[in-house]
Image 1 (cartoon, rainbow, N blue to C red):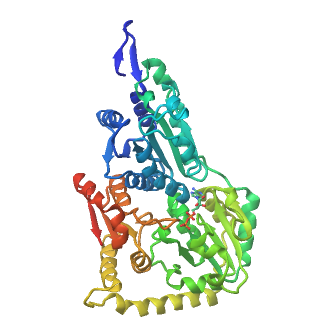
Image 2: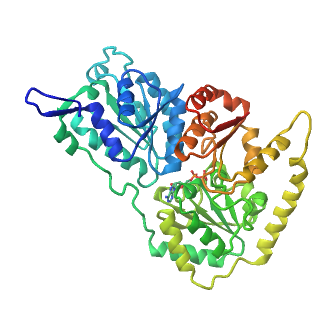
Length: 477
Ligand code: ADP
């Protein structure tokens, strides 16, 4: 509410309706770079008790919002100015969409009338047209009375089904539009059940369990979708009850501790080549898994089972003989119950071979991790950080670079879920500082950012942001 009109009725405006709509939906943290036309919006948000973090560059604010969405299952919000700020935020929006992270990019924009007639407004750009192809959904709000609907649609689009990035366009004139405060309040929507359970069909569960039962050399692959779902205990029960060795994708490390006896991480090449049945849980057969074919997967014919909330993901690269379309929690619960009481573990000839390979690879690596070479090398340096993570399993590890990423991923064991945050599906360099900032802001945990020097250069100026907000982030380059 802002003021009263001549009749003494309470009034509100676009600024306050946006704030009220976000707060109604428990969105209280905003990652932004202030400027025209959103400067006052940021100020009013702060007045209203929201946490508004100001970055040096929108791309980093966007990466922060993306990872905030991944960690919290609520859309992370990035707020930018028009044209250049919007474009800077767009890389992060596309990154969020590609990684299936819920995020909303809100950008102020120039006036529609002038943009559409291309009359040369300040920072004139048809932002919505540009954003559309890079996100899951894009909406523009022209009237104050539609703000509630616009924000509700953005939240639902970001969270439902396969999560992703949403663009929300607010032309400058919207902010100052005034309306009756009561009518304004009634126009706001609290989004009910934005990520509804998606129960898989019982036929798909029976089919999947049937395929696993016949397997001689089964393997489970856990992806970051499984980490996002926050059903860690159910995943543990499925893995342990089935007795099947598992391979965590990079950001799925720690759903089960990396020193779990069924972890096949240190025997990755062997299990990919030799497995005959592969159960994918929240992981895609994209380039990170060599598209499910070719040399990495060896000669052994494979049957793929896939649990995913997105039906179109099935058969994207190879045939999925048992697609399970559903949310991971519901799907795993149904599988555990369909497996019944007497479930036979995979043949020991398979699990013993993996154990042997894991042990020999770990033993071979051990002395290299303890080296004190001068100048220091990757193994010596990361071997030291490995111990720190082991002693502080609650810290969040942010990791980017080329060699720094590859070595750290295999050397540093993770013990808890969602503690390893990295470059994601595209392998984006420059996510580091934005990710570190949001990780500490959203969780309160200390953050260790292990950065290649080139990767660090993309977002290094955000060190100032880290210091300004006094965040518990330690950066190792
Ligand atoms: P990784 O890179 O770790 O292999 P991906 O990002 O490729 O993981 O895959 C994540 C998958 O998880 C996506 O296909 C996405 O649709 C799916 N996913 C995300 N959340 C859920 C969920 N709650 N239930 C089921 N599937 C999900």
